[in-house]
Length: 122
Length: 122
DNA sequence: AATGAAGTTGACAGAAAGGTAACCAGTATA
DNA sequence: TATACTGGTTACCTTTCTGTCAACTTCATT
Image (cartoon, rainbow over all chains, first blue to last red; front, side, top):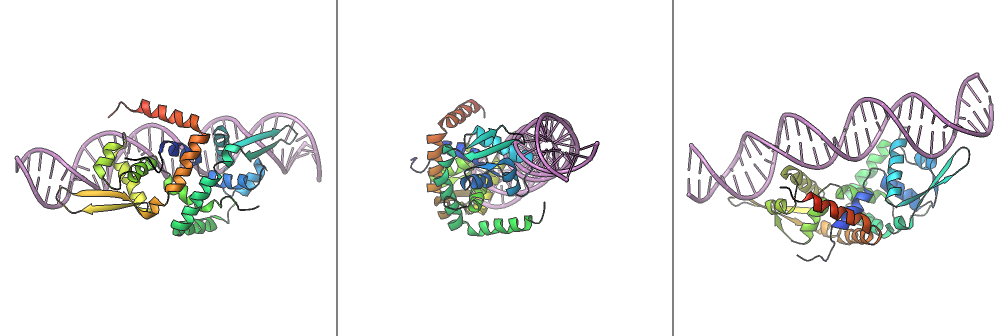
């Protein structure tokens, strides 16, 4: 048995950190926006419950993927942005993205269709 | 908004395909063994129920990550091996693995400890 | 007839994940 | 006074996931 490809334990951690229905979309937004307010993020992701989005964000903050900044003004403003650690995931995520597009394009298409259907609510 | 890093939709697909409590370990074995019999795999993964392992394998076969080969001998023999599509995941998985080891080593260590504790049964 | 191997299936339980709706605080605005 | 905004919390519910256990299949051997 040789361990050339990957050792699977860190893999487990990485997948745990990424698992969560909305985390990919959250990352997507944070990768492209350098900072975003909670409500804006919420409005940009159709169909998430506030509570669930909050939970995801909390986990991601605890995992060090994102940074939360609270500005003490009177309608409170909370900004989220990606951390260095989160940014470091970029290449790995891009590799997964590529894999899916090259080897699983049918499934990607299915997902796209599902999403189209899912819009029209809220 | 620029899409330099990743586009997230294929990401979703990739993560879906990888999500499942035992899939990383299964991949780990298949990456290092070119073929393995069901029962051997089962014996090598501590604490999975047969049924759950079977379900994971079925999903992974349906997703095209692995190949199932049934040899019609008299105590039936079923071999699993990684497919080309599965192999193509190698670099992406290695990237995740690296990320975890470089940026999340504490969490990896936690996981290792948890696993140590979990052994001692079955 | 009984045993064993490799796999499959079903009943069922418990845990985890995801989701709804209502509510709070403090300020602002109509 | 009533309403709205923002970021959260709380209680509650439903769905999905994971797991155990037992039973069953098929051919070959004992």
